[in-house]
Image 1 (cartoon, rainbow, N blue to C red):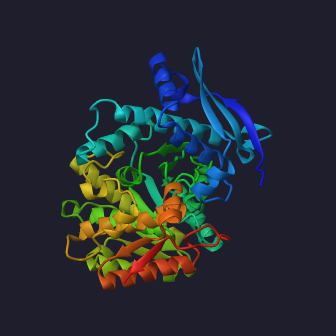
Image 2: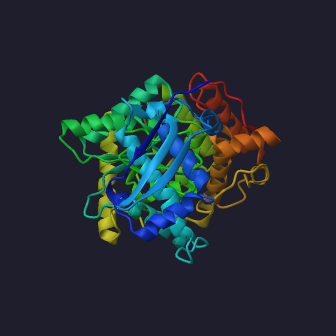
Image 3: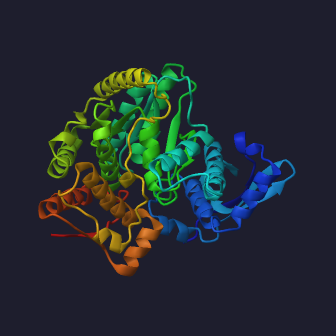
Length: 456
């Protein structure tokens, strides 16, 4: 099938508009080296926004002739884009938000990766070094704003949700926007887009013109969750672990909507961190919410958490069903506590330095068949370490569902095999089976073939 494509050249605005000759040369070198393919794939995903596609492999096969090249000019650079998806253009001109996102890709893939690999600037073998990388990337993207009271709400949830669930995410976003809250999501469709749409209306009614709609993604997931154009601050982190750390370091509260394996991964990541003894007493508002028809979904999530991590983990969050106003009120009250705590401790409002994040949550997990088989999924370990291993299991399912590399690995070697304590595997199988039955693994209208097998 032929897809309509367009050629264009675009110029940067903002920070990328003014570059030294050394910086331009570095970008040119990287664009012809090993980073080019990652840069190209992320750029294509950004341009494919709104297509209803959530398959990284299919996207690359749909536009095999797509090219993006950096052109050097006396006063900087341009991007030469050939055979780009026509959906990124209106009357032959690229949509402004998508153009901004393309230069965010350039900044984070070519520019930041070059800095990370240059010399011994960052110690990626220490927890402090990894956090320093996360801080550096966010600061470079101008995401960290001092002298601003805490107001950033991270919203997690699936890209494949029902119409009623999507409308509910907008209602919650609207109530948050009315209270001056900014929104941060994984920046894709579904539960990542709805809160931003709702917040824009809330901000408009309050005449807030500086509303922030932050999108955090990473190269492996961007094709499945292409940034929606509402996002006005896009950051592409090097891997899923740094993306997750960026969420919890910058956010002041987290609201979780219904989702699939990726949402379960995010929940387990945050619960594992908050279960660490060093984080006892640290305020971090966490609310699970959805419309009336999502009540069973959250009961099943709550049951899974109780079966695996125990009652203490269940005390960390609230479940609020079908009440957007109450969600916003609870978030606002929770953020007030965060502000007072940070003020007393002398911690920054814009980056949660005090949060203890173990190496278990920072080390990149490669979801190979061997690594998935060898996961330690048993209760004979500290509960926060178990949460980290459960998080890895769901991360592997996400990779097999939507990531180009994961899909190809499944095609070549068959399904991932997941094993562990019998009761834990029963609970995990029940949860994943529910996600499949509720069409939470792929976008509506697409048949889902499981990429995993639970060994009992």
